Each structure stands twice: as C-alpha cells, then as structure tokens.
Length: 217
Image (tube, rainbow, N blue to C red):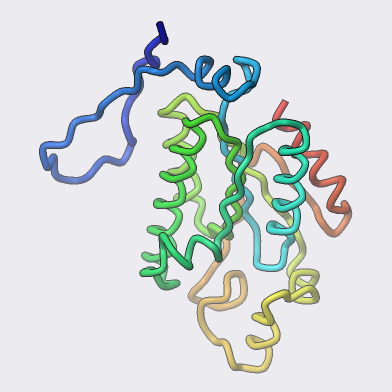
C-alpha cells in the first residue's frame, strides 16, 4: 500500500477569495514515485532555478545540464523563458506586473513537475528577488528542494554575446524600454544568498554543469 504524502501547507499565496476551494492532498509518497520511475527512493524531484541577465549563459548551461542529467539516468526537464512565453504565458507582456505573473505561473508549474519526481531546470531572467523568493516558498511548502543558481556574468560580456541582438538595439536607440539591467524601467535584482554562483566569464560550460551537479548532491 502506498504511503500518503506528509501533511503540508498548500500554496503560501492562495487566492484572495475562498471560491469554495479545498486543497486535496496526494496519497503517493515521493519515495514510491521514485521507485516507479526506476530511481533510488532518495532521488526526489527538485527545482534548479537559473537567474541572470540576458546573454549571461543561462540557456547554454541549462541545455548542457539537462543532457548531462539524462545521461546520468536522472529524469530532468528544462523550462525555458522564451518557450513558456510561446504558450502558457503568451498573454503576458513585459511590464513589472506581467513579469511577476510570468514567474508565479512558472513557479507553480515547476513545483508540480518537481512533485512528480522530475529535476526541473527553470531558466528565467526573473529579475525581482521577491518573485524568486515566492517560488522558493512554494517549494518549501511542498517539502521540495529549490536551488537558486545565479549566473553571474558581467554586463559587458552579456552585451558582447548579445544572442538576441537586444543590447545592440538598446545602444542604437531602437530599444528604450524593457531590457533588464539596462532600461530604467527594467532593473535586475541579483540574488543575495543563492545556493550557487556561476561566473561564466571564468568557467566554461562543462565547469558550470559540474558545479550544478555537485550542488545537487
């Protein structure tokens, strides 16, 4: 017989109104779910949250990390900021309010996927500390690990890489709003106490991936 999930609080930020909603606790223990996936019972789901400026290297590291974990036999799935905005969050723009809602939705999805036993690699600029802390609390309320990974790359290196051409547009005056870390309306608040800091100006992709895998142990 499967053991029930331990009691926990639901979402720490529930809807303002009750709406006759009731939290329905699961009846499958994380260890049983892991065994069903062919994993040791101590290999549970978690979220690795990559934050950093555009061009910092988040996506490049996340892609390599996903491949590494799968090769190790660890079930992993990457949530990419641009990909999510093509579907789940296609209705959101880049105002401060929409950025916050974007991260709230992604945080909920990441939590559900981690509860299902996956290692979630969430790759989002996520510029506001309060939004990232909210996602952390979601995971803590579900007894899930949340590892914040700050991809700390100097702005000049990000601008030199410029994979989307955003910094070039800002420099030429074509882009005057919405560029995180550059535009006055789009500040970036770096993490104060992340579990891991990756300096891509000093480490190669393989070194960064190795650092994340070590932080997971």
